Image 1 (cartoon, one colour):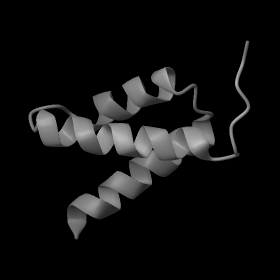
Image 2 (image 1 turned 90 degrees about the horizontal axis):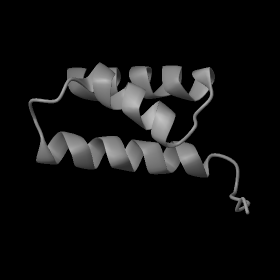
Image 3 (image 1 turned 135 degrees about the vertical axis):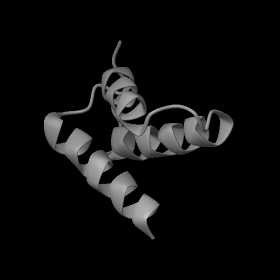
Length: 61
């Protein structure tokens, strides 16, 4: 049975998961983590692109 989640909930979970993974494993490549999150949280391509931009901008600040 699928659970119904508010729109954007998977993206929030993916963002939190990537942040946690980066803290625990600083050697991990961002692109690999984003790809894993995309699969794990079944994100559409637009959300995957958002994650790339979000974390890339975060790293440059």
